[in-house]
Image (tube, rainbow, N blue to C red; front, side, top):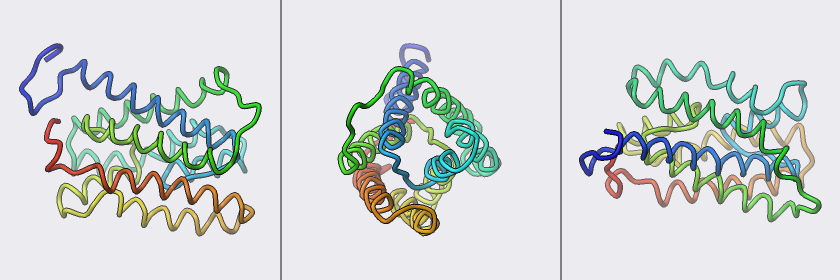
Length: 203
């Protein structure tokens, strides 16, 4: 299992690199969004908002807000998925705490940050999904609905994102909400058009 496995099953090393690459890309996305003071959708968006207005960091909020969703993950998706997702959430929480010490921005265009944030997060989530993991929260619900009821994961996430952005309208200026929304749309388009179980069967 460490180095070789059937074509429909990832090896342990496959999964380790998938989780590291996926969470690394999403951590870069969060760093871009924080650098431009933008937000996004899902639990990550809620964590960013709470990080801006509260005393705790994004990583702390992200880890804590995901805890209630693990019960659904265990019951509906199984222990393998749940353990991978817990590891991914923990890695992202850690990476987002460390990355600001390694990456700073002298100038960061807000439209570019929104678009690149959506692109890097989308690529990172695809890597995680294809290794049987998610970043918890809405991702767990989205993957469950896609696998059980054939509802595209990106569509589910876009619906949840709408609620986050309705709250953001009350807290942030229109420019922040607009550029953040662009990034969220880019992210969900990537997921909706690229994540299909019939095109990628390995677990």
